[in-house]
Image 1 (cartoon, one colour):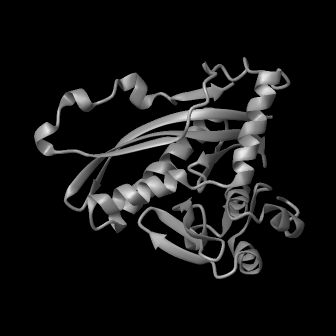
Image 2 (cartoon, one colour):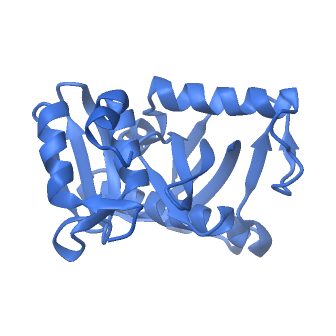
Length: 83
Length: 161
């Protein structure tokens, strides 16, 4: 794992804390992450291979985008030192 | 150093019983961090990418954008459903990403960020993000719809200044 990545299962733990009721929808070319409680219709797209079963790590720029998009970047930075 | 950029992107998207010509002018911010060159979408706000340099990061961003549009087309039962979903995706943003882009633009204008290093044309107009999703009729298909190869392949980035 490079310094620019964190483990996907760690990320989902922080998502559980910061993004209430988050949902992941698997698509042909990646996944879409929703948080209806914060932004009902909007989503962050993560490309195939960036996460999950095929890659246990995820790049920090995707993590930053994810939490920033839902307005939780400062809280995420308090929990994820690399961010 | 953060670089505020406009990008242009055009792609045909195939859905159920429709073909759409999608043209986007959006905003992104290019930042060196996490040991990479990172691109953060402002419009669309729900997408990020990375690479070894600005061009490779932008190629990664275009791949992510195309993949998202293709997935939206797969989910859409009609052309209008796709048009609405694609428009919503490009419009969605967040205040912090907008503020970062505006701050980076201010630094270019103030001269505190060197604008010459990126080697990009400077766009001084404040251009809104735009998306056009038009239904293509097979009877109106024409080679003239193909963009200039240079435009189709080139990064199509401009520095907002």
